[in-house]
Image (cartoon, rainbow, N blue to C red; front, side, top):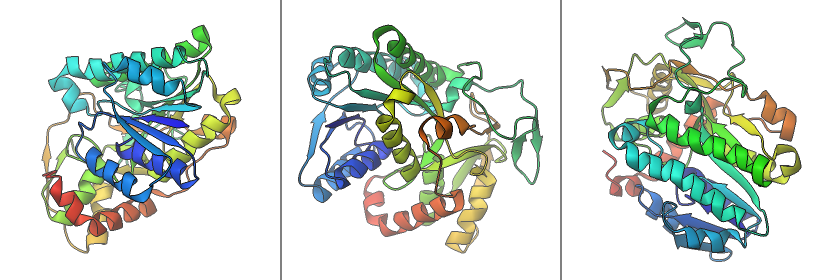
Length: 343
């Protein structure tokens, strides 16, 4: 049985669907506090009548539920979390309790399991901080690393920036150390910008999905910064495949940290995404600019060579193709998206 915390979230829903489609048993733990999570629950329940169990669980407090669940699991994917930098600045205590304390509670629940399941943690590239020491150049309205075009490696020193970076970084390091100290089969994924179907992005989180949704509904888009900031982006099918491969090859991946992103071949700036959406919508998009957000990096590109070397993973969906798939999904599901009142 596969257990997924935050299993009714965007990535969790895609991961659950992947395993369920293969006939595997999946148990989802979620507190259903995020917009779209209840809709994702209904989607999974409607599509899969067998092998799916869903339990309401708050990782901050429902320790007994997790202990019982994880004692029966062969693999645990910890995806639950507070995911927005802006929210972490507004409410750092809540951010800490969900991301740091929640991660610790998950680890302790798994540590008490006699099964010692595979345990993979969804971390973030934000643990590397702003990286002000790196030289950045600009070309065609887009920022690039001047000296490291291949991207940031896992050996890069950590420099948590923003409460979100601190809370996720705490979990990141705890997961790594529980493999060393307690022998847990834990793995850390430092993920870049993941996007795809069943993602109900907002202005605070999930920028690719938010831009796509806003463009389809004709809503004004605000660019924080100058729009030249760029990221390596990763389609949801690819991150799901990474979870699956890392779990299958746990003897190689145990106790290790991997950058999981689109890599240098799949980068997008905000302005490039706007241009792409103008092509897909066949019309100009209205947008404005506002001040930079705290801790925002001008550029982040993952070096993903370690993941390919250690467990044979690399992205298969090009950025342009992935955005087009998401765009078509949003158009096909406008009624459902409207009910969520994202704007």
